[in-house]
Length: 132
Image 1 (cartoon, rainbow, N blue to C red):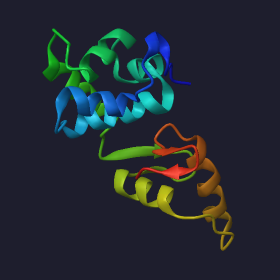
Image 2 (cartoon, rainbow, N blue to C red):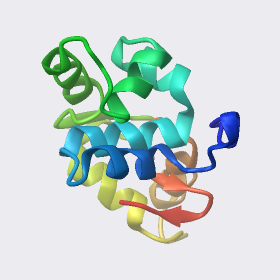
Image 3 (cartoon, rainbow, N blue to C red):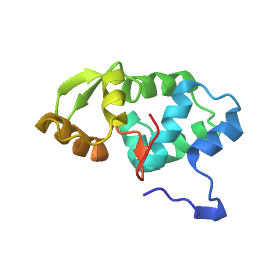
């Protein structure tokens, strides 16, 4: 989904954020992880900025109001609650906790959560690994 390899650069956006920022702020890290999961265009749409602007922010080259971008990222990506496709509104911490749990057939809800987390827009899992 991401365009790794475009222009000969195979690094993830998370890697690029670390290179550009060093000890990157939490919202930059989360934005880069989101881009690696869904791509620049989708991440930009989610926070209300163009793909180019998002790339510039992650690479620490954005000339615009970085504070405004931070506010939008915090609202869209780091919100205290998220909309879960199974449980409706839940805390971000609960969301990350459910994602970290292995599959369980102990209850229908557990099974539903496990499967929903794989495709949820809030998921931090990538290719079978858990980044929560």
